[in-house]
Image 1 (tube, rainbow, N blue to C red):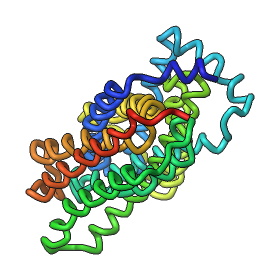
Image 2 (tube, rainbow, N blue to C red; image 1 turned 180 degrees about the horizontal axis):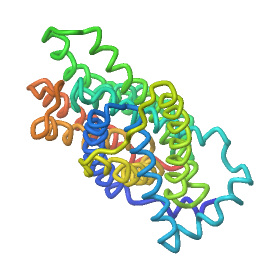
Image 3 (cartoon, helix red, strand yellow; image 1 turned 180 degrees about the vertical axis):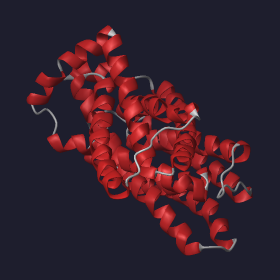
Length: 323
């Protein structure tokens, strides 16, 4: 469906800037969701609220914008044509797990270290997703330059993480809390690849974002209902209304990332998002710190290495031909 593909492609430079902005917004979303979990004393409930408000925001947008509304009306027919595997809808489960990891880990380890763990997982899986052609609808070769960029990003993550373990403290708990975003990062590349394919088939990132949030809401609601029945705790309200903005912000981030995946491929999109996310995480750790927040020379060095990896990975993109 070449007509659909052209709708969600943008020039490479625009896609990189858009992905960087999405990374900054992702850092803000992580902080909001973490604080919401603390305010509600319910990590799963906070993830559910975030996904439910995000679903409501993208649904209202889809109903209000004529072009998106037209795509939404035709979504059922496209879905019945089986132009993509039904299991791609599990992308929403990945998103739900990512939001839960925000609520559970950010407050304890800080945004910067959380982002480092996410990056590590993304770099491991991003090359494979591109090689399989899952994200951009075409296979992108695993060249030595691209492998070098991924390795450089991993070195950046290690550089920033080591001081946190050398500083003493509960290393076991820290490692466990980092496993959550690490696994989320491993799955996130696959998620973006699946959503990129769904958006291409439907001709709109709005539909892929709506399906992602819808699936996540169903999953989180089922888990939360079981938890509520066992604990008797059902309150999901807090007077800090701004903490509910994480969900709608996530819809904007996911839509932007889906567009950038189709235009750049998963690896370059991840590196661009990572650059913005790391920068935003550092600023938030400085201005709005949590118990685990730490910004030092190693963290700043890690950011510099990540940006270098971005430039290294983005350079060969402009010279390769689309398959």
